[in-house]
Amino acid sequence: MASPRPDQQEPASPTPQPAQQPSAATGEQPRGRLDLALSPLAARVATALSLLAVLAFGGWRAYEVLRGPELPVIAYSALLSAIDAGR
Image (cartoon, rainbow, N blue to C red; front, side, top):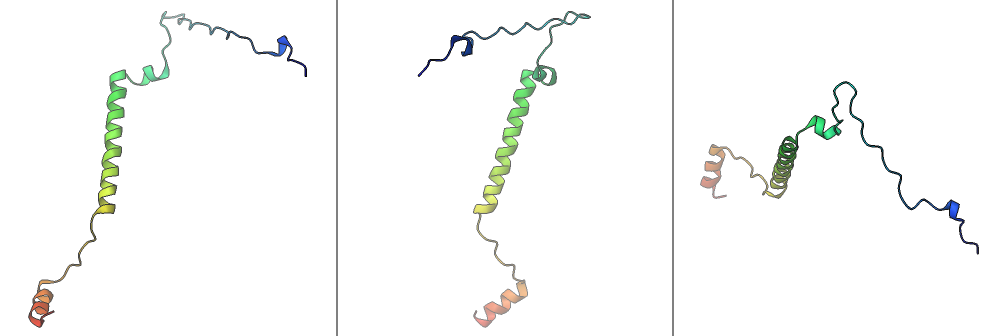
């Protein structure tokens, strides 16, 4: 069985990524997409509110599933008639 040739193996060191170049007009460094959309504090607040909304919805759904069945509504006069009849 022949061993693989050295030129078929992947290079051991990854190629370095070029550094981001500043904009020619302003000299600013480009920022990531998340930095442009939300500040770190706003991202934490949005995440916390989303988590709170999901937990509240899940709690409400669990309450609806686990609560007892609703009792039938009986008219007051029918209730009195049933008591008088001994039922």
